[in-house]
Image (cartoon, rainbow, N blue to C red):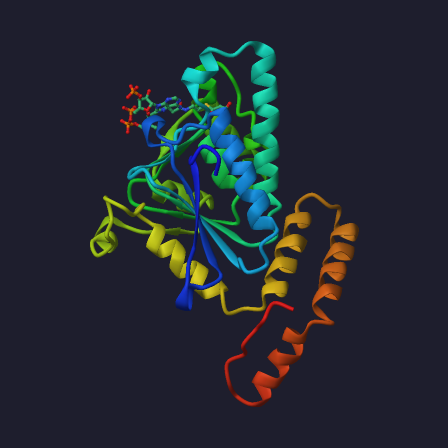
Length: 276
Ligand code: CAA
């Protein structure tokens, strides 16, 4: 990417089809500056158009920090209208992430605060490492979550739990996150021992890759269509939600992969899907 603050890595061999998107702005703990958000938008455009990418894993190159949220130093230099423009760009980037056709998995190692937490809420799955530290600290900065946090967290865990977290600005670890339904899986410290861990791996990244590998063999068009239908489920009224599911289903019917699935079942073997 132009500023090198977002790095894309395409995996090969058995992991071919997995793409890792790494946030890479170590000096500011991946704080969301204008330049990082611009890099993110470019990267998302590239991924959206890449039919070889079946699953995306988001991680940080900074051990112990996923993303520190808005860049508070850059923010201090912004006029109110600059802040408005920045938030508009950030919100577009997050909507682009949420609506990426491929499934996305965030590996949360260390702090994912404010905008960093909101970024993770735009992923389909969240995996927390032992050092995960999540929260919406905005009210402690006399602002409110402004990149979709009030909406997306409410959809995920309901209004009362969201209010508790936003009013208190509390930071919380992986197990409370799991019990509230914010993360799908937690990796504890002992399980990270054999990861190359603290140096060049975000803790929890290996587990996120395992999740990616479990998605990888399934019908790529089917997984994309399932994502599209489920993303609409929480916004649409029930009748149009069912219509959208039907439209998404209609996309999988003419695929070769659907016939391959039926053949493989009959021949008692694993299907090999091509994504068409
Ligand atoms: N913006 C800009 N710089 C940041 C930053 C941020 N959000 N977070 C950390 N940094 C910088 C620090 O200033 C420091 O820089 P210097 O070396 O020049 O002093 C460097 O990154 C390292 O920071 P720490 O020494 O604090 O690193 P740590 O590993 O001990 O802690 C942390 C990491 C837990 C993320 C901690 O830095 C922290 O709490 N940061 C602030 C989190 C926060 O409140 N974010 C804003 C949320 S509000 C928001 O996002 C609203 C929105 O508009 C989207």
